[in-house]
Amino acid sequence: MKKFFEFDKLGTNFRTETIAGLTTFLAMAYILFVNPSMLATEGTGMDRDAVFVATALAAAIGTLLMGLLAKYPIALAPGMGLNAFFTYTVVLGYGIPWETALAGVLVSGLIFIVLTLSGVREKIINAIPPTLKLAVGAGIGLFIAFIGFQNSGIIVADPATMVALGDLTTGPTLLAVFGVIVTVILITLGIKGGVFYGMVITAVVGMIFSQVPLPEAILAPVPDISPTFGAAFTHLGEVFTLQMLGVILTFLFVDFFDTAGTLVAVASKAGLMKDNKLPKAGRALFSDSAATVVGATLGTSTTTSYVESATGVGAGGRSGFTAVVTAGLFILALFFSPLLDVVTSAVTAPALIIVGVMMASTLKDIPWNEFEIAVPAFLTVIMMPLAYSIATGIAVGFIFYPLTMLAKGRVKEIGPIMWALFIVFILYLAFLH
Image (cartoon, rainbow, N blue to C red; front, side):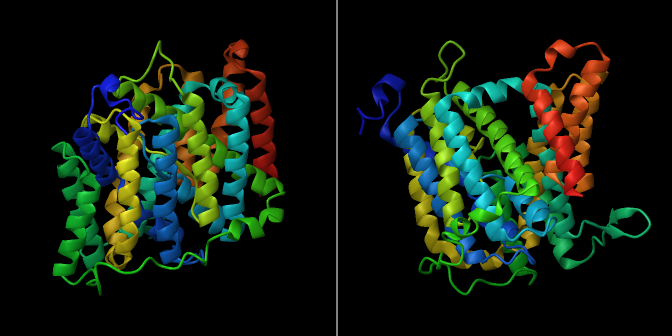
């Protein structure tokens, strides 16, 4: 093992890697409860316990692939943002059955594998302007935060102004506000796993004040995954529509950005970059895309690399063994399904809001003084929460970018791929409605 993971070459050891793997797991363990809560939202028809198992297994398998194939200290799990898109836009918004939505995730994963193996993936990523990539990430952050505010009752519907501040004196809403404050303090103090610990503290306080039900048990046999397992394959024939094409493209684009940004960010922090390039990038990308296929088969939205892996790197993780440890902990988590009962919307809302804050930090890198770039970036960001759709935000931004750049005389900076996407998204918006 020491030789396989090159401990000596990377200047690490078994103890350090184990601590790093535990640190990464704690930093992203919130997804075990947030993802089932989101995908099994009332109206979707998905089985919460089955999604919990799918989430843990997809994270474990994807992370294990990354650790053994690419040998990177990077963990994977169903991505935040993509699960919101899956639930609130595709299933609840478009009225597409969750089985068909899973089939779309499966197809996007298969396409991702083909693009990765062929090398086309890098060309597509390079063709999309960095500012739009940043805007997409920030927009998803605002969208996730908005969902958190909405689910907690902090923000409510209003017939006069569309949205308004909710009643902050009600028990669940007050608990969510408490959770936000606690999580903010924990992260501000630099506590690793602050989002997860914030959820734990909020749940405990909720139980003390009878706002959260007490769990009937802590440990239990692994729940049945059959309600979601393989459902994607039985609905593959339903993905060949223009609407589903837009859905699949959105899954692809967001996963493109998440994966590329995370791999570079974490690898850079770990000192694994060589000449500004990522060694074994193909293996890392294959692990990521294969994890999406596995996750869709099991019954969850797109599985992707997690930037929280940087916490493990900060604890000294340098090799794939960090990922192996994290994967093992996700397997262990399968036996804690009873805790799902205490993770109410008031408990998950703070996690959504804080993760949204973290994702919105990319706004600082957008050159707002260049109006031709500021307009498509702003529209991408603002349209996601306002239209309640990640896909709509991406579409509007990708339509306006060629227009503003053309008007500014920067037509040479618009490649053929961007023009192709310009046409695709016009058709997408026109025929979708």
